[in-house]
Image (cartoon, rainbow, N blue to C red; front, top):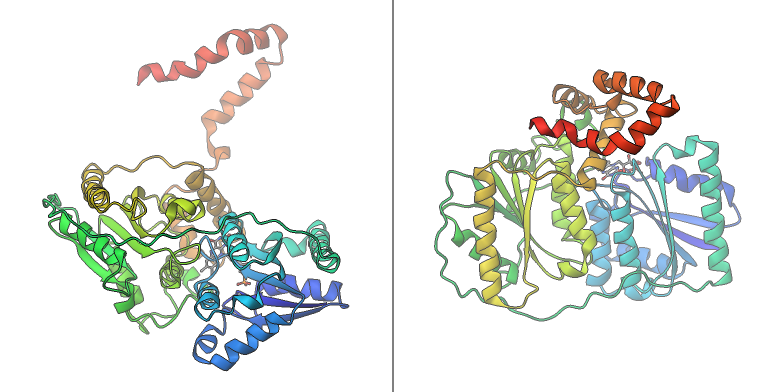
Length: 454
Ligand SMILES: Cc1cc2nc3c(=O)[nH]c(=O)nc-3n(C[C@H](O)[C@H](O)[C@H](O)COP(=O)(O)O)c2cc1C
């Protein structure tokens, strides 16, 4: 059987994910696994039509496709995202249609599920026969039990293709409606109250809904700075080289304008992200922004800022994208104020929603309001905390310094009061009469007793 492996690592062959693919290759020599380095070669793929066609014809002639990639900032790397966009732009969906496919990733399980949801939806959109995913921790291959699991995953993949199993789709197609937003309000200006507000967009077309929405938002406030990602000199996407791990200095330092631009954002109180939905995310330009921001590694540099999203497109049909942006905001320890979209198809309502967003960001910024995290932020931060304290302290030395200095190592083991309390209570609860008294009579009341002093 011929399987095309679409390698999503910008590191090409020197990729952790490809070690997992090579393991499968060695376990199943009867099948051909042909690796195509998509992310590493994206510039050539974009420039050279013949090369793009060669890849598509390999895909067309394969029995199955394995999307194999590292997690990059809640999703695939920007380069891989760009390749996915090119499939529709160049109308080569035919090569993917009805093809069996699976997804293999490596990561530290930080939002691996949102990347998998994304790829599942993309496969469904391409009418592929999706056989499921395998989400490996980047160190899983060192464990015998995980090698066994990976072998089973691969065996099932080959068997299912051979037997032609029936697959079902997990995602409905996106339904898009034609609607032109026409701003009708001449907005009353809202006082900035000295809060610095910036809007960033990836606008290409002047007549787009996004452009009009950005204008309405900007007109609603006294003072808004604006940047278009397309006007910033960005030489390329994140290469995954990890040079930033030592002291947050990016390999692109001095080579383009992205780092200066990104550092400028740190000076604003409110950051508004404006973009149009492309496939099941925003554009690859936006993805490049998030990936290149990784020179700050795992440090929440937008801490305490107010974040808002102006989105053109069907966000209500894309809860995964909403979760990504919510998770991103919470991981940044920022306050996600709201999303405004053009889905209502009512210009008046959109006008008012944008004005309301302007009002809300200023109100929240003025009162330094950051709402508590949900599982998205709390759970995510614990993954980073454990990783940076342990196996990723080297190479991420800058993160370790920040986490130590900012109390992010909040391991419960260190809480002496809780440890002593647990020891005493566990000990006395071994006596049946006391245990009965505590569990049947006192527990509920004791849980609220400490609140009485507040
Ligand atoms: C820019 C960048 C972003 C990353 N984002 C995530 C992430 O969101 N979630 C996660 O679990 N791991 C993340 N990782 C870790 C990689 O997914 C992991 O190290 C992977 O095994 C690298 O595979 P590769 O060597 O094939 O590129 C990120 C790494 C880099 C360099």
